[in-house]
Amino acid sequence: MSRRRRIYEGKAKDLFEGPEPGTLVQYFKDDTSHEQKKGVITGKGVLNNRISEYLMTRLGEMGVPTHFVRRLNMREQLVREVEIIPVEVVVRNVAAGSLSKRFGIPEGTQLPRSIIEFYYKSDELGCPMVSEEHITAFGWAGPQDLDDMLSLSLRINDYLSGLFLGTGLKLVDFKVEFGRLWDNDEMRIVLADEISPDNCRLWDIKTNEKLDKDRFRQDLGKVEEAYQEVARRLGILPEGGPGDVKAPKLMQ
Image 1 (spheres, one colour):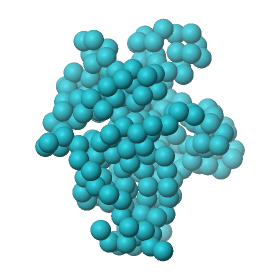
Image 2: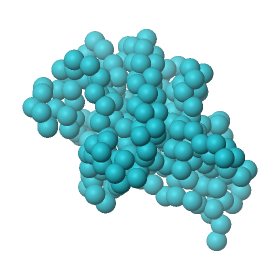
Image 3: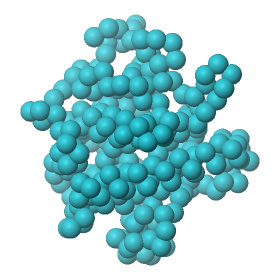
Image 4: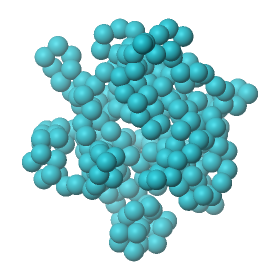
């Protein structure tokens, strides 16, 4: 692989400078973590790359603007460089995770309507929950940015809920991130990061079996098999199963 300069090192992905101005190479790792717990899910990077490529492409076809350009190989994809808004948007359809704990709602309870929550993107602070007032007061995003993020999040939820339903999966909740994409002097809000079992809760419709990162968080076992099952249901499981590609060589 060509030597590239690493722009950002994350817990599950690294970003390298792209082949053209305004582009980055997003590299998917097998590393995973939850609070203080860390581990490796063999083949996760390969599967998440394929799953995110598929979902980003489908959303793009439905008119949702994204940073995704194309998949480069088993672990890398080309994306547009964006200014990430430090706010994570969580859309909840079914009670699970922190929402169940905060309000004492039994996990699996269907919510009366989809609920949107905001979290400040800061690992050091534990990504605290914030309000729209916090977001606008601290200048993380303006009112119009927020309106765009809300509208896009609901469109993503509607489309993905139907798509997963067709594969026998229930979209319980998911987290998305957005960025500002600059084109000359014009700016637009686009979907960034990834969409995969790392940031979606996906349950089997008939059995409520969890097929996402909760299997790692809750020590349920068969984590690799769960990610593979999601890819299989979407019809994109790599032939021969997840393989491996080494990271690009870094510039000294």
